[in-house]
Image (tube, rainbow, N blue to C red; front, side, top):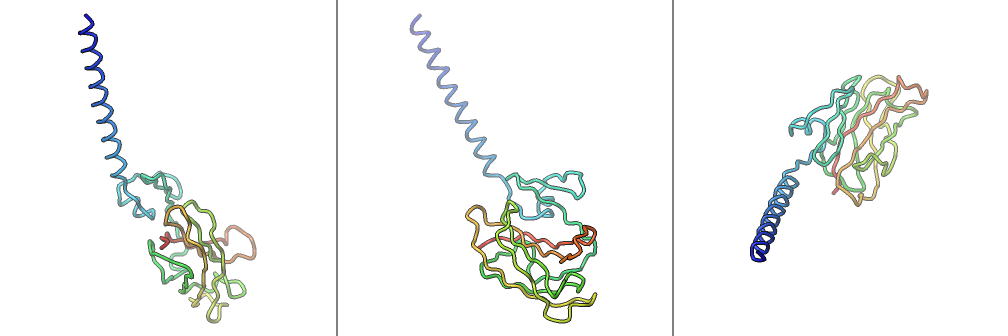
Length: 179
């Protein structure tokens, strides 16, 4: 009888070890298969579902939320950086924005970390006559310290809105990666 109990306990122990090993390997495989994305479009392309909200939202395997950019007036900003570019400090940016984006020849530029927390803020400065509706060249220099956690963030160009009226707010945001 004692022998049967020992065999039973031993059998249960072996089965538990195999079961726990199997569960650990399946979990590890699931973690290793996660896909990292850096924009709303990449999130959709990777096969993650879009939440039917306005604007649409997409969440990746790392629980990062990406929001679809809705351009009110497409083409208000032309930037020398593109989505997913690697940046380092000091970052020199240049591009063109419609004159309506400037107030007194400048507009705010914000750099955020992966969680949307502001790392630094500065101003882009017009390189020409800004009191026009045409495109005006601009430049900005951003000095920052690379975030300790994760290597991604956002560069946000904000239309300067001295009136404070929300209907005149606009922004151009791209996802970037820190070197």
